Image (cartoon, rainbow, N blue to C red; front, top):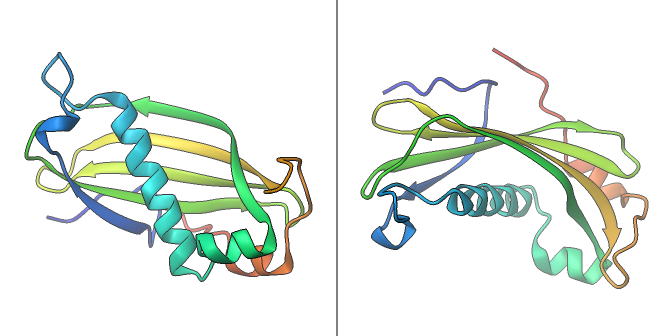
Length: 146
């Protein structure tokens, strides 16, 4: 199946819905979609060389400042999902944004679209701080929209 991504070249991870992700309504509880987006974001950062260990060494990280999500469909036990993300903006100083899309990999249906805005923070005190040069270099904005 061809995935109908909103933008080109997403960074992706896969997930299979386990029974412990199902809520009382019989489908995935919304907070697991957020957890999968967070897993995708950290995997993407690690893939470009910005591992948790490096960020801890530098005492710098990107913290979520705001999140918006549209939950468009439901996932059920056994469903295979693909979680994708793109860095869509960076001011090269303090702020950056990521866009997310979660697809059912069998049907191709988009289940979630979301955007997270981040601010670079000092990991010792949680205060905003200028992005290190390596963040500016590695968190490249992916501008291609289909």
